[in-house]
Image (cartoon, rainbow, N blue to C red; front, side, top):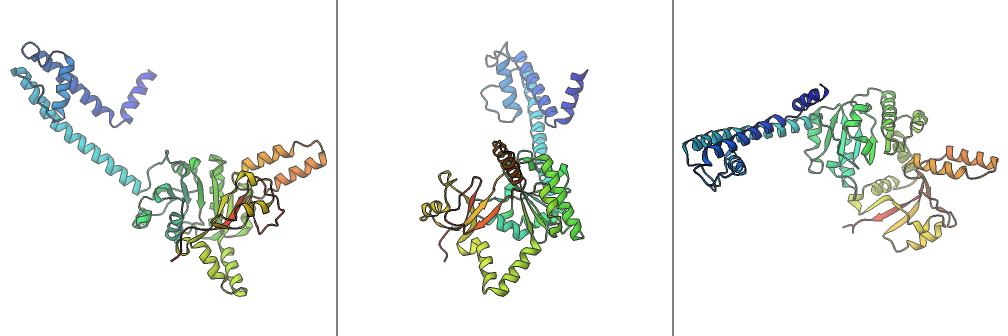
Length: 388
């Protein structure tokens, strides 16, 4: 009974199964009938394989002419098979066209799931500056292309189509839904993403506190699905920072504070606004501010050795970024290392240092004798092309 129900469900849920079975039945019947009518007087049809070959070629309206019936019964079978073939090909064309049109329509409306997407970028939420953000993301060398970016939002699909009018964003993907819900995150396959960017949503959130609370909910939802994916969240109010850290958010950006710092710095240092803008506008000025991996031979060694060893490299070393990568893995490694001592006082201090571990901690212009720790990257200003 269970097997019968399973088979029934399979037939109902597989749209191509019924026409496939119907075509196979036609091939078998036509092949058997033409062999039955032709085998006694036509040596072109010796066995069922000859009939099946003829039936497939005739049904597909190809008509090689290598085999053809000569009896009245065989010709009647041929005429019926030809008419069925014309109808069948028209039906198939309609089915395929319908499937493609339906899929494109569903994709435009954000109703398609992306279970096979891997190593992609998921953007949660919507902001009026999203077009500029996306263009900057796809403009970064060795970053994401538009087909590797999924936006989760309840924004009208027309707004997404407007974004895709830009050639650089033509293959952008869209998932309609609440970006903080498990179902929408699963449809975007956030578990296999390389990074998640959570924006302070300005489309559905009508107050700063509401936008920040949704950001916290999104981080918590993502962490229930994956403890490894890298999460960068935009916040408005710093008072919720501890909530985000408890939810294991990897990187937090307070957009108002960034703007305030730039304005205050510009007021006391001439040209600082231009300097900071140019550092972040890599496409226009031929260089970019980025982080790079440090060769294993420099780990646990002094910063001076790394600085001298990379003196001929096409970048300027500005500092170090400590505790990069997966916070969960780093804390587990640090915890195992902390427990290796038998000194209880030292053990307590080590465990406290694990608890206080700060992810993505920048250190600019470190002293020459500073020891480069594991999970550290270099902060560099890198040349990417000759400015004109």
